[in-house]
Image (cartoon, rainbow, N blue to C red; front, side, top):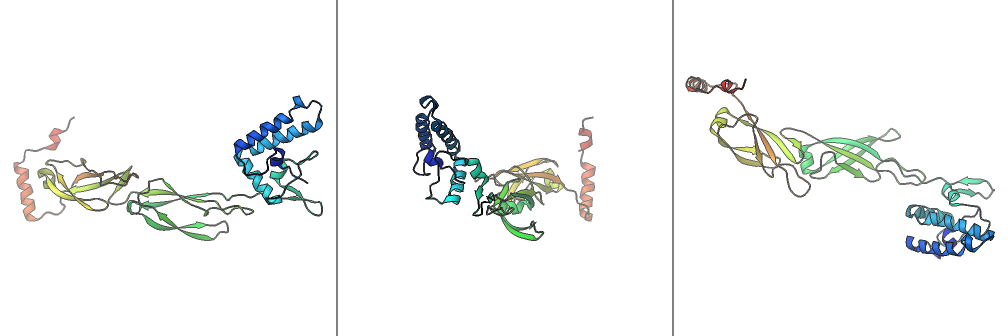
Length: 294
């Protein structure tokens, strides 16, 4: 069975033409064989059908590429195919792939199929996400075997972002490329930090006297220790913001570090500490319960 040479039908010498050139060739051919100019001409009727069919296929880049690929696989890049009157084969036949074997029996060409993508997800710590890390994951293949894959986690990856590993998905069929492996990254909160957007949250533990008197103390950010000032009378639950010490924001900058104050009372007092607290209890008129709004 012969196949139509759509380029020849449109009077094009080569397949290396632009869509605009195809449109120009179509208009010229359609004008030449238009039914109004060829009344009663059966050959012209057949020609205009072929011209329209050729244009529908070649004017769309995706179908043109598919036509070229299948044509070249059937005939080679330099072969010319029959395109004259009486040809019955269509582009549908070519895409399905019906051919005749030497014995006259039809051969069904197998379609090239790209493998499916595989999606999975892994959890990593905030530190691993901040600094980047290589992690090994294990996947079960279609044959039931375990496949180990090393994943390079880039520095500053966002929570929920996906890493694509080309060709690590399901294998293709009939020579098709393998699919990809898509790995969703879940950044998990881990001591001492929690991640919200590009800000990091941490607890800052203070003694009662530091909270009452104010102090200068150190707070650990994810990559260094930073000295901050604690104002007098700060309360548990209040927050201090340290700009530029948070997580990476993807634009070369960093979010903030938010330190939440937690005042901690000593569980085991020395004798001297006990006496001082007792003395404070005697002389202090502070009663937080009296300030509660009922």
